[in-house]
Image (cartoon, rainbow over all chains, first blue to last red; front, side, top):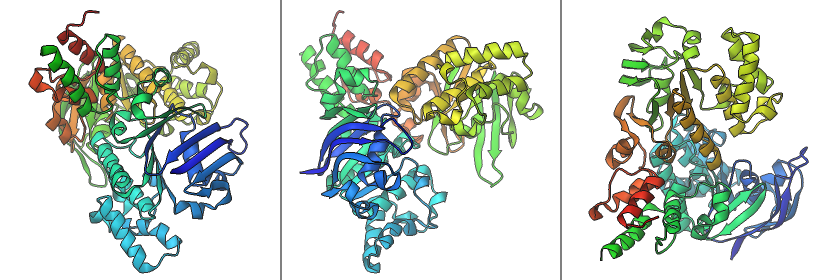
Length: 284
Length: 273
């Protein structure tokens, strides 16, 4: 079942003549883990802002075409209504955190919805536990490391128990191990809780293994949309200069020389396994 | 040449960011300083042009202690490109931005004109000569920051996290550019935790952990030691991980980039081109 459906979507920021997204149509199914990528300035962030109604309600201007998210028509519903269905985690967690303790930050969205006290307490405990930051409960968010702040930002959004989580480059300030841990937290939310995840990311070497759907944008349009292996192996993805996983590149180099692996790898373990098959066969 | 001798640095708030770092960077070298968030990487390189002065120990640039030289004197030799270009840019046009330092260093007007044109051209910014830096995209602002430093032709170029917020194409352009600078004899120091970028560039790697140097060596030696890089909160390059899963078949463990990987595999499989 589709949880996000866009048809002929177009948008220009107020005061700008050129459209940041145009003629954009796509479908995201409930429970998918989607990677949204493309060159800087391709319109990824603009599209994310449409999902929870920041566009058009906060940024102004007119959103043309149709956009339905979790059964709600976006232009026809307020940010408030949309926020409980779609959570947005920003690139820089500092733009999102402001309270004096982690607990208060996580509770803020729920208080705003006017939820009963007991329910808030339950949800905050659950969100802190799920993101692995129970021990940070009393700490001030601005004193935490980048990785910890990023988890707090995710917990804030998670506490709202959204159907969809949109994460805009949530690890760009983190070291690789920190980034990998965040991706694992996000993957857990997707696989265990069935939350639909839309991850905006350039670091495809680390993130691709979790995805079951990849969308590539360029100049405000979707140019590739489908199964990750197919997309990463396509000529178009290479030409547009998307940083496809190194093991996928290796697959392509070998294929050019007549060595064909069983399938297109996106993660290192499966690349090892596929190479093993070829190497063992060669020896046998 | 930059010599760091038993360097300690404590910030005014009491945080001890460097705890006895010793390191030599010879002329013409290409070094990547890597490690987890908060390991002291940026603090270390800020000593190279005197932005920070040692609490204990010393840093020598071409034999002169940074304690006895001003930032202005050191900057002539050591150019620093900040992580966030907005911490560096302030002029009304791109041209003024690049002119500013040259004028401060007392270059002649004719030289300034020539250098500005050269730098704009080098980084593909000529069309933005009269544009405000703040009207440009993040990637373009980073290029303006780099152009303004390269314009005065420093011997050492320090780039703090140059790949953050850059897409693949921009990173590839940057990589080619760094390799070119280094080939022209410049010393290049990159602070980064972008493992795949380093794997493609192949510099010397210095791994830092909690204010100390954990390891130093060739990229293919340091980045292929899983327990070592894990301590520094880094994961080995994807290609390395793939090869480490095949050691029982006798595959080498020190492969970091996709070009070497495919060459080695094709050799084993005896595929003739």
